Amino acid sequence: SGGGGAAAEGPKPLDELVVGFAQVGAESGWRTANTKDIQASFEEAGIELKFSDAQQKQENQIKAIRSYIQQGVDYIAFSPVVETGWDAVLNEAKAAGIPVVLTDRAVDSKDTSLYVSFLGSDFIEEGKKAGLWVLDEYKDTTEPVNIVQLEGTTGAAPAIDRAEGFADVIRQNPNLEVVASQTGDFTRAGGKQVMEAMLKSNPDIDLVYAHNDDMGLGAIEAIEAAGLVPGEDIKIVTVDAVKDGMQALADGKINFIVECSPLLGKQLVDIITTLNDGGSVEPRIITEETTFNQEQAIEALPDRQY
Ligand code: GYE
Image (cartoon, rainbow, N blue to C red; front, top):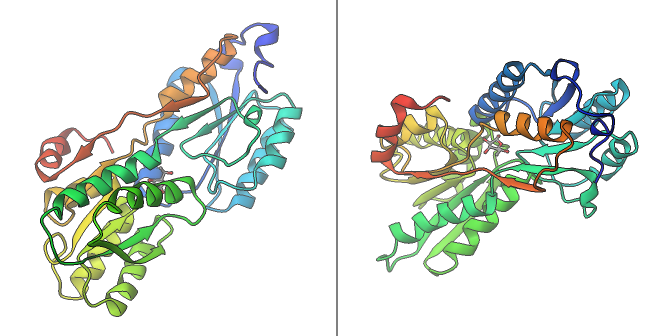
């Protein structure tokens, strides 16, 4: 692995450690909560965090990582906007002896020595959980069910995997059909715009599967503008469980949410301090998550942190 550079000379005092974090952007409620949690966790640990926002552009993330390498940070963590195209810059980090931790999203690099660990959710599992709810909801239906899918950012691990897990499960009932699928880039505006177009070209939509809450919330606006009732005329299933999504679920406008936790900060700090102490970390660390129906959302909302 590329790890262990700092530990070779013994652990550094935490207030001398410098970590560079290359964030995806600020595209969703999930991302905002994730950024806050990471910044707060490093501050609490007394570790300096250099932070950059790539505005959902891979070239900006690559630039940020190169600048962290140049500045000689001790560790680099980042959430890759898309899966492909990272080998060159990750090899540069490796050559500089800077360990890299993937946070939240995966890369498709075959060479696993390019990063020490991948900390984040199992997105295929999330897609399956969404699919299982749909399978159960329509188990007695003999009519075709028209599903539209609002995909996350094209090429992003959560978009690819949430589509795959969902498709794998709904395949079991031939009445369940995805009649349209398009990217809304994980944003509320994107979800609204795509849903508007889908409502025009598909008169008979039964269910929306949105890869995150924000796109689902955008779809709600489009559905209401078309004079339909979200959650009743058109059912909605989303992923994330941020506060606005949970409120819409409590209000009956969303029908089911698969949780994806953005609170990765503390685990990321643990990884860095373990490596700094010369310890080793698991190559894959999966976040624990649940699902919510309306009742469960009403119960969880008062204590929801994000
Ligand atoms: O679901 C979405 C965000 O990568 C898991 O990115 C993350 C996803 C999250 O924009 O809301």
